[in-house]
Amino acid sequence: MTQPLVVIIMGSKADEAHCQKIAEAARGFGLAVALRVASAHKTPQHALAILEQFERDERPKVYITVAGRSNALSGFVDGSVSAPVIACPPIGESFGGADVYSSLRMPSGIATAVVLEPANAALLAAKVLGLVDPAVHHRIVEFQTKQADKIKKDDREMNP
Image (cartoon, rainbow, N blue to C red; front, side, top):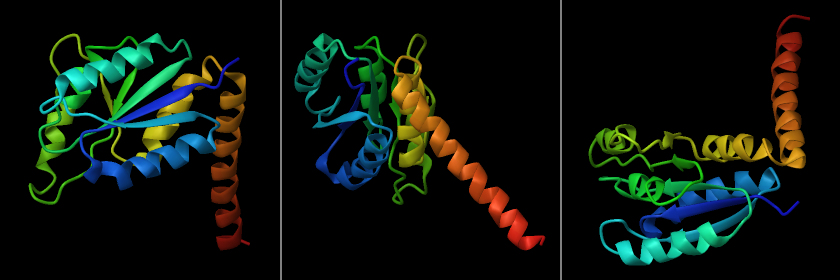
């Protein structure tokens, strides 16, 4: 089987640090990662060209969109592709976090998931792709087992 793909599309290069956190976590689950910059507002034709390129790629994939303020990117991507889309907006301080609302409510027929933590967005993508790739599924189980073992160890240390 070919390596499943996570396509991370950021609305601007200002979102790169946020996207790198997602990419690092996704690679940890054995996923291929592609990082692209496109804006639904400023470069819709460029965004569509990128999406068409990835839609021709037959690998199993999940798109993760990273756009703040007025997040048209997530809905635009979801309406243009057949694969799942996860919105992982950076939380802006300018609006007291209120800009996240543009990621939460989408029109009828647009079904983006919203995950605010970058590593958790990668985890959700891995869980989706783990449905078709046993190696990715195995890495998720290992990850969850390590997390559970740490909690149990912490509990034993507090209650000898």
